[in-house]
Image (tube, rainbow, N blue to C red; front, top):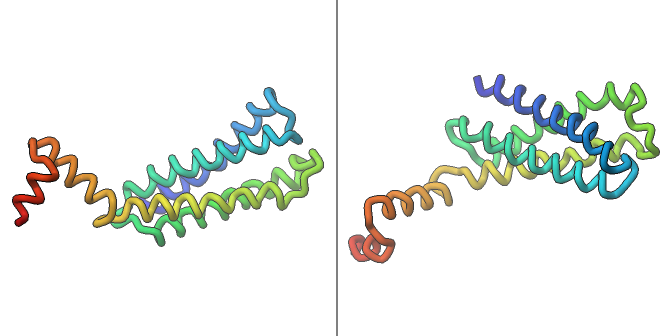
Length: 147
């Protein structure tokens, strides 16, 4: 089931880029720096969202599982872009490599989110603090109880 979710989120990540690119061309020329920056922000935001959605369903999210997930998505995005580039989608003066190099951010973001979701790390400390606050215990009282 994790593989199916991985593929679905990877295809969705690529789809978000294609749709965002089509919509952003209305507001900014494809050759402009504004367009490039907006596309990069869209890619980073979508990668972060889909990495979180995918990794929260993984039994033990980690830096490695995030990197593998992001690497798979990067490969999917490049593979799905190749037919579009062959059909002339990149004829706005930019070399095809400049389209695919942006996808390198995907494994970096996914790995960082995987590391942040590691059990026993920041998430576990935040959950413990939340439980203490919910039951009326303060951090100082918890520290005093530990002594």
